[in-house]
Amino acid sequence: MQIFEGRICPPPEGYITIAVAKFNKTITQRLLDGALAKLRQHRVHEKDIRIVWVPGAYELPFAASYFAKDPQCLAVICLGAVIKGETTHDQHINRSVSIAIGEIASRFGTPVIFGVLTCDTIEQANARSGMIESVKDKALNPAPGNKGAEAAEAALEMIDLLTELPEITLKNPLSDVLSKLFIASNDDENDDDDDDFDFEDDFYLPPRKLVKKSAKKKKKD
Image (cartoon, rainbow, N blue to C red; front, top):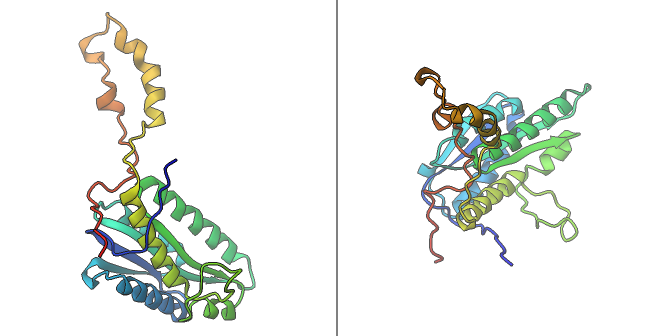
C-alpha cells in the first residue's frame, strides 16, 4: 500500500499567485491578509508571491488560467466573496466560478484553490474573513475562521503533495481514437507522397501536466 500526503511547509522554488476580487473588498482584503499571514508563517518570501486584483469573483478563473499555465507557478489561490441578494445572481456566479476553477486545476496540473465565500448574509462573510484561526474539523471547533488563511494552507499542502506523487504520463484519449481512425490510411501502400499522414505531427496533443518536474522538495529543517 502506498499513501501520499502533503505537508504544510515551505514550498520549493517558484511563486504562488493570489487572485483577489475587488467586489466586496472590505471582506476580500481580510481574506488576502489571512492568506498572506499564513504564507509568511511558512517562510514564503514576498518576492515569491504575486497578487492579482480582478473586478469580481466571476473574473477569478481568467486570472487563475493565465498563471496556472506557467510552470514556475506553484499554485493559484482564488479569493472572493459572493453574498446573496434579492435575485439568484449569486447562484449563477458561484456555480460558474467553482466549476471553472476545478477545470483549470485539472487542465494544467496546477493546484487552484477555491477561496471564494458563498454566503447568505454579510454576517456570515464577516465571520469567515476574521482573524480567528479555526481547527479544520467542525466537530471540534465550529468557528468559521479566516478562509483566506485556510486556502493558503491548502495551497502549500497541495504543492508539497505534488513533489511526493510519482510522475505519470497519460495518453490523450483523442490521440488513441485518431490513431485507430487513420491507421488504415497510413498502411495503404498506394498512398501518394502528398497525402501521407503523419499522426504524430498532425494530431499530437501534449499530455496533461500532473507533476511539476522543476519542483525540488526541500529537506526538513
